[in-house]
Amino acid sequence: MLMSGFDLAKEPKSAFATFEEATHYLEDVCARLQVNHLSYWLVHSVDGTPDQVSWITTYDPAYMSFYMANYTPLGDSSFESAIAENQVLDWAEDDSTKSDLLPTALKYGITKYGISVPLRDGDFGDVLFSVNVKSTDEEWGLQREDIVAKFRPFAVYFHGRAKPLIQSRKFAEINFAA
Image (cartoon, rainbow, N blue to C red; front, side):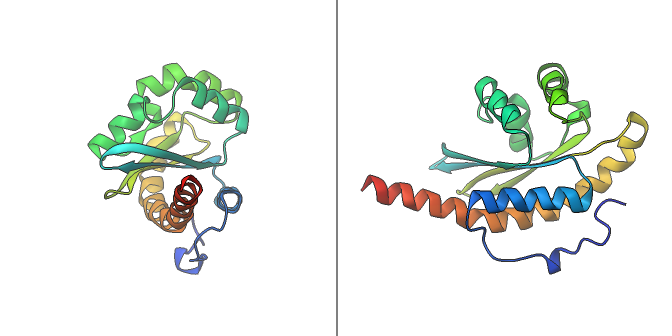
């Protein structure tokens, strides 16, 4: 059973010191929970205008390069609709994901069985936390709800640890420019 024996109360609480540390943590969680991939997007806004994008993920860097060259979250209709509607995105039901991204994603071990959970953090930005698993069409309907129920709290937890890191990067950019 997904996440059995995984207790958020026993996970570290401190902010991530580096993006590498956050990535390694997600890789460790993937192994412990036996999921393919985890992905955290944050689109930070200033006065409602997107200012900075942060992506912490376990995806292959070649896939990440492909995605950023051809999409980005600011032009990805699936990303934008999940955030705007504040609804979990089921990859297996999303037509644009299936037709556009899936053929390339499959080459990098990313299946069509995944969900993206939107989170809003006021003026700070919008988060889309994704979980990708191995499944079958028959099993996916039952797994999906379990994944949403268990990973929504994890997404909030991970955002809490990643936010100070993202804020510190922003402060460093401001100090550098000054």
